Amino acid sequence: MNGLAQERCDVLVIGAGPAGMAAAVAAAPSGASIVVIDDNPAPGGQIWRDGPGASLPPAARKWRDALDGRANIRVRSGTRVVAAPEPGELLLEDAEGAVRMRWGKLILCTGARELLLPFPGWTLAGVTGAGGLQALIKAGLPVEGERIVIAGSGPLLLAAAATARAAGAKVLRIAEQASFASVARFGASLARWPGKAAQAVTLADPCYRTSSRVVSAGGAAKVESVRLRQGNGKEVEIACDRIACGFGLVPNTQLGRMLGCALASDGFRARGLQVDARQATSVPGIFAAGECTGFGGSERALAQGTIAGHAAVGNECAAAAHEGERARWDGFAAQLHRSFALSPSLKALPQADTLVCRCEDVPFSALKDCGGWTDAKLHRRCGMGACQGRVCGDAAQFLFGWTPPAPRPPLSPVRIATLAGLVASEGADARQ
Image (cartoon, rainbow, N blue to C red; front, side, top):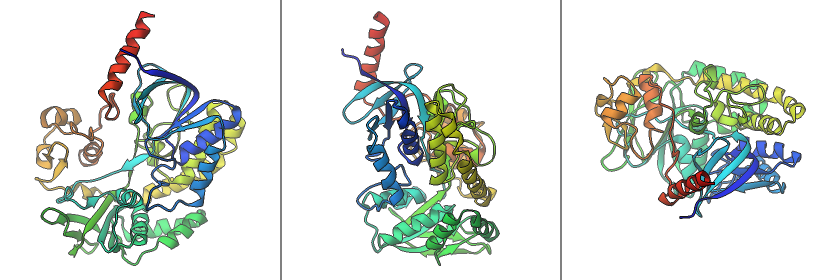
């Protein structure tokens, strides 16, 4: 039995969103061999996702061109991290096969995912996340003429609404759970970031309502209506064809945690990977940048990625030169976190029979008396399905305060041939 191919690079960047692209471009002048991997078909991450229904902004094209213009940067799209077989090594898999990649320095730019909170009817066909709706439209989902209601929290709701309208959808309501006072304070604070203020003006929508949250989705086999609770306590039912509901973002820290990186615990960085002034994690040789360290927008991700790239190749002066830019966008991230903090009242969204783990059909009532995540997993099978707790784990942390356990390999679905090849490779190494 043949083992897996082995490769090596000086700097391995995980994620080709704004942070990952900036990190690779910053490290490139050193002459180091750089590999960037991403599970999407093309660089850009979630914010600059390409596809039949996407219109890439100039900034996305600029950074793509910068990647293409460096001979010592190799981008491997459609590639996922499966495991970490040895220190300083990751097991990667793509459509063609698998490889064991040795690295000198590692930069984690793994981004974030949406927080989806369960409510009655959330498993009906036609219910997605707000960012999920954006991704589907960019990938070519036809929504022209559809009646859409968007709910949850954060500026992503407005961005999703703009994407849907541009694709011909009829956005009937944007329900923001934050109060009018919080949103107004956030809007007033944008004077410190003029670019964001201009963006907010372009995204302004007459269907936007504050202190408003989803109660339930109605329909037989698919979404037919949504019930919303408004700020005055009254409920309103709106007939619709699709609901996009997202409650902010959660940093993707699975790989970092598996490698032993510590998590931050302060402010908007909470639940993200802990980094120092040079974006170094608690593990020597491993850096992190972008929304895996706490969400705060593409500008912050670009600044962090640039610092991480310079620091990874030992260019301390160049890294220090971008600290002011990072601090500026850290301020924006902190304001964003304060303004759109989730109300504890959202913990009342699920009813007794509302599924929390939809992979294993585990209802809210089955979890209320569990003592923690391990108890729920062992005795209720919560988190044992296809998503491996990525959706229900985040929901359970918000609803019950449970801390998910450290992830174990494989981090993503993997072919049997890859695992067999890994065993063969390790056997060959042991015999040498």
